[in-house]
Amino acid sequence: MLKKVVEETILPENTIPRLSTVTDITQLASFTTGSVVSYSLPLATSGATTLDATCTPAPGSMFPIGSTQVTCTATNDFGNTGMTSFMVTINPILQTADQIIIS
Image (cartoon, rainbow, N blue to C red; front, side, top):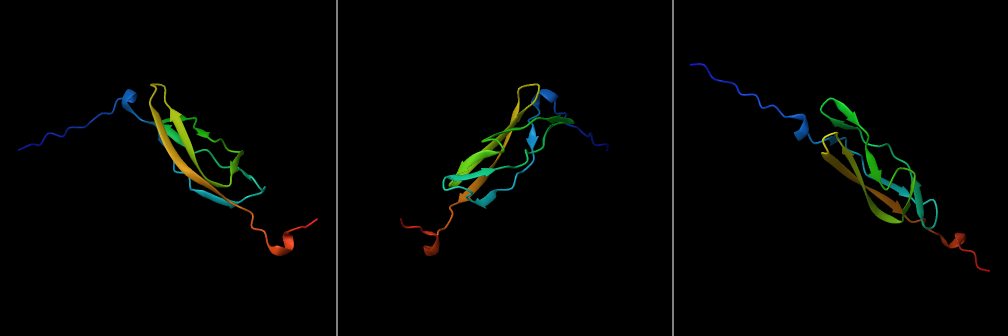
């Protein structure tokens, strides 16, 4: 008996863009208020097409002390949007007693 093989075809209009994973970032503050953080945008694809990804906050933004979620999205020609996110954590500058200036 022959078995019928059924292949499921995903139509381009049903394809959700995929974005590569971005590793969480942790760094010390460069200023008392936070740090400017640069990172590479994730690779975004939809089928065989490469898309432009946008992230908020953008690379090169000032991140405050603490943790901030960065959300990256890419939208294909059919209006389907894919998303990924990662965390940026800025640790405060620690002061020691000899760094404190009393005037």
